[in-house]
Structure formats: C-alpha cells, structure tokens
Amino acid sequence: MKYLSFLYNQNIIKNFFYLYATLFMLFLIYFFSNIDALGTVVSIMSFAVLLISWLFASRLFKMIGAAFISTGVILSFTAGDSFQTIISNTTSNLPLLFFFSILPWIGTVVKVGGLDESITEMVQDEQNRVEKIYGRSLFTTYFLGVFLNLSAIYIIQQVLSELFKKATVTLRQEFIIKSTLRAFSLAVIWSPLEVIVGLTVDSTGLSYFTLLPWLILCSVVTCLSEIYISRKEFKNVEFDAPFKNVNKKELKHSIIKMLVLLVSFMTLVMTLNSFSNLGFIMTVALIIIPFSFVTAIIMQKFELFVKGGWTAWRNHNNTLQNFAVLFLSLGIFSEGFNVSPLPGLMQQVFGYIDSYVVLILILIMLVIYALAMFGVHPIATLAILFEVLGPVMNSENMLSIAIVMIVCGLSIAPAAPYGLNATMTSQYLRINPYKITKINIGFAFRMGFIAIAIAMIPTLF
Image (cartoon, rainbow, N blue to C red; front, side, top):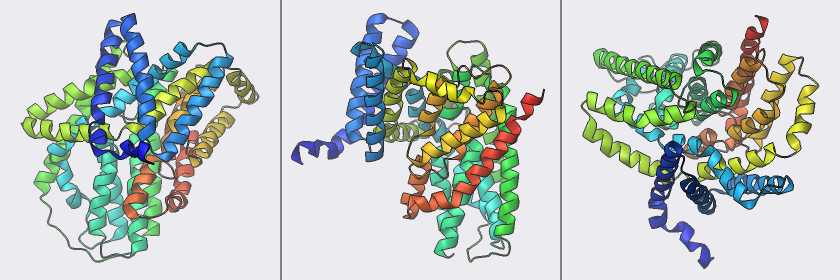
C-alpha cells in the first residue's frame, strides 16, 4: 500500500542511527544528572522510539512487541497505573539497549588488531581431517565470540564455507551449524559483554566474579563433551581443500594481543564495578567506548579503528529496530506484570517445589526452552522468571538459580528457530531454521543438564 511505502525508504533506514543516538545521549545526561524534566523527555522519546521502531521491525518482533505492549498496558491499567507511568516504563531497559548498541566498537578493535586475518590458519588441517578442524573451529569461534559477539559467527561461517566449498552440502551445513553456533553459546555464557549475563548479575545482586568460575566450569565441561562426541561423529571423514602455510609467529602474536585485551578489559570492569553503583550493565557499557579508543591508540590503528568503528556502529544501529522493540516493550510488560496478581499465582506454583532446588532448576530450563520454540527471547523469559522467583530465591539457592538462568538462556540460542543466531545462519546457508533446531536441540539439553548438575554443587556447602 502506498501509505506504507515510507517503510521501504532507504534514506530513512540509512539514517535511523540518529534517532537512537539522540535517545542514548539524552538518557546518559539524565542518568548522571537525575533532572526530573529531562526524565520526562526521555520517557516520551523512548515511547516514541518504540512506536517508530515497531513500524520498521520484522514481523516476528512486531508480534512480540505488540503482545508485550498490549498485555503490559492491560495489566498496568488493571492495577491502577496511569498512562504516564506506562510510558515511563519503556525506560527501564534503556541500559540494555544502550549496551547492545555500542558492541560494534569493541568488535572493531579486534578486527583492526589483525586477529580475524589469522582465522583460516587457526582452523585448517594439513590432512583435511574433519574431526581436527571441528575442534579448531570450536576453539576459534569460542575465542572470537568473547569479543566479537555475533559478528564472530558471521566471520567464521564465511571462512568455513570457503574451506568446505568442495565438501558435500550436507557435511558443510552440518559442520557450520554445529561448530559455530554451539561454540558461540559456550563462549558467551561467561562473557561480561553478554546481555543475559549482565541482566542476571543486576537482577540477583550477585557479583559477576562470584558467578564467573561456575560459568567457566559449565563452559569447559560442555566443550570437552562436545569435542569428545564430535571426534567420534567425524572420525575418518575427510574432504578436499587447499592448505595455506601458517605464519606461527604472527599467529602467536595475534593470540597474545587478544589475551592481553581480554585480561585488561575484565580487570577494568571488575575495578569500576567494585567502586561504583552504576550497575553491571551500565558499567560495561560505559567502559566499552573509551577502552576501545585507548586500545586502538596503543595499537597505532586509531584512524583505521575510527573509520571502521563508525561504519560498523552506524550500520548496527540502523538495524537496531528489532531489539529496540524487544527491550522497550519488555519494559512495559515487566512493570505491568510486577503490579499484577500474576506473579503471586506463578510464585505459588514454584512455592510447591521450593524445597527441591533441582526441580526449580529443571523447571527454569524447560520454561526457557519451551518459550524459545515459540519465538519468545530468553531475555524476556528471564525478566519474567526473576519477578516470579523473587520469594523463592534466597542465599542458599540464588547462585544455583543464576547459573542455570544464564547457561540455559544462552544454550537454547543454537536451537531456537526464531532466535537471531539461528535466523542469521539459516539465511546464510539458505535452509529452514527448524533444520538448525533439529541439529542443535540435543546439544541445548546436554548443556542445560550439565549446568543443572554443576549448579547443585554450591547447595552442598
């Protein structure tokens, strides 16, 4: 229809980043100044951004956003909240949206540092043994996923597609789906750059560094099981591919740079989070840009970084509509849900099993996985569960619940048919997303049950 033709206007789409940048700048000024009048402006603009983003979002996120908004409005009005309060509820998740919007800057630092150029050398095998390449691909995606986030999947999939171009279509697709999506989940469950990790830390009040060793343990155990199973699965499978000579000195130098970058960033996050009341998500978000700029200067890649970072950030924010709809509408739903009778009803259900921690953990996993199959993002599910589990959580089970929420919230990503990871991969490989679900759902349950087993350990002490 002609009156909707503006939705396809490329000039509007290419300049969407101005809208988000303005919102974030006003939000940051209000965050540090706490000026009431500015807070009202931010609330109104946040609600306007939600409506505008909804028009340009994908069909799935339009449905999710409409469901969250309509349900949240009904629940809020039923509880006696005003329309002004409902509008202000959109700002509750602005830190999450701001955090997600600036991730390209840290990814650009890694790219200009030259590590991505060594990926092929890191994954190839001189004899083209698939079980060896699988382990190396798993490690490489894992390594890059910590910093590059979703762009790591895109980069590795391109490299593997080129490497496996002479292999059968079935082998190529299965290898890429397993090695990239599974490794990404293994990496991000302990990354401070992951939204679900930050949300869990802020919602439970636990220290990130209290969770860190348990999350790394879940990651390592699942990774070892994955390598063991893949070696049996791909044993004696070979294909034809050229071998590129490896410059071991340059490769070693690139890996050392990444390790220094990782340790420095983690140390900075730990220090600032300990001496401020900003909240974990805002702490990480506020560190990313200055840390990225300083790192680029030290690497003597500043001009290349600014040019690449600006382009990546602009393109990323021009396509931020889906996540703007998710996070901002989630704020309306979450706040409406909080003031409704529903948390009490769901709390009664969990209350029946509150003496059995393992049953609570299994139920958390099943709820996250089931809703993900219908397109509900784990972030939305976790936001609901945090409200419902409030009375059930205590000092004895909080760590266990936090571990399972993080791991299960991210372990379903390789198998969720409507999730961003699977959607991106299905489009790249030109396959049905449910084929990805079929291949990876077993891995999701394996990772979930490993997390539950490890999460039960703290309850023994």
